[in-house]
Image 1 (spheres, rainbow over the protein chains, first blue to last red):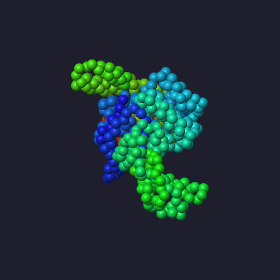
Image 2: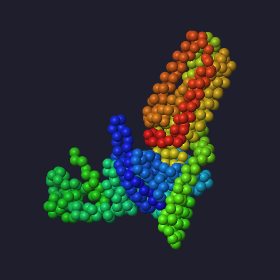
Image 3: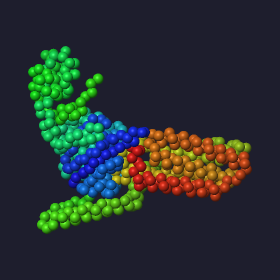
Image 4: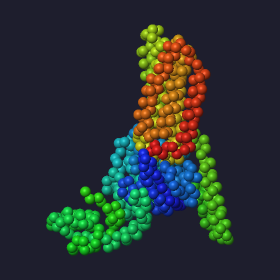
Length: 294
Length: 256
């Protein structure tokens, strides 16, 4: 099972201008968790919509096992489970009714749908709230319902757009573990700008900027590029403004002795007494998406 | 998908096939067969299943809403016209029917906007039937509801001194005009614009149709059904064209 994107682009006409939301993207997705990282507006959602068949590429083609998805028609949608960034629901629906509704749209037979819904409610710990209206659920529970609907058709390809936004840290960890469980024999594509969401669970990552894929690779492969570029140092708080202009600061921590611990991207000589730190995916992300100084 | 897996496993097992090129050729052939059979799965029975299931989730809510509107229209009708017959009745009734007819067409707007309002459109688009299939099913229910409402309104006024052609003109022509325009707007604009534009257009239709009714009254002309039937036929053709556009093209993309 594989999804191949060949020179996929998407243009939008904005009055007289043409905006390239996705620009000549080529990717080869194989089973496992794929992290799609990028800042807001980098084209992640548009790319995911095209992969799911919600939008058509302006140029290029998307293939499933070598067959262009356009030729597969409805059957391509049968293998996809999609959780959009804005998870919507009709306010009058209970969890059970909502899942039944989506099952109907996915063309599942009644008996099969009932069986799958029961199974998923247990798996996602939503059994107790099955007759509760979705509107009354917490953010985490709503997200779990969202995951549930995506899994109804037992998809081979699960596409999750910003699945952890609005979740508390505990729920995020549970969510990540759930995704890792689901990733066996499936392609799970997660788009996020929260690096820690994919750092530990993604088999491979793709980093997007301005509609283009900048880099792809496993987390260790990507992180390896940052060897020798990440340092930590202790500085006087009064020097902070000065260093902030000279180096890319990743993290700041006020110590009990009044000093400030600084993690930064740059050279060892930039700050006196700096020592090398173990690089993380977040460091690469910050190098590719440097913060704008105000 | 199942057949594709079977094909793949079958070919994976056949390691002693002597010609690699032949194997590749057969694989490609299987992919083409699979793709073509996938295309054939777009059958009307699948759409029929969706319609059946949508009845449970959506149709009764729509018809209940339309029933409420009909009840309000009938209540207004009896309050306005029952006690004052026949002083201004004959002149005002066609105009009232015209307003009712546009209201009937407008009753579908909340349902059409619903998926966009509750951010369900993207999710619905990613499912087997996609937004176009779901909207097509909804249009079917809307059509049944609208026609029933028009029939009830026609039956309500049939005992009064109105010719069939006037009832036909006041009920059907504004309804079809509004329905066609709403459909065109729905397919061609975003949901946010659609709401405002359709309401504006409905008001314009009511005003315009009232002017035509005034003209008929003042000029003592009779409503020539034949001419208006041609107009309605054109409306039906446009509706069919728009329906096909909705079902078989990617026009729903900009609704997202």
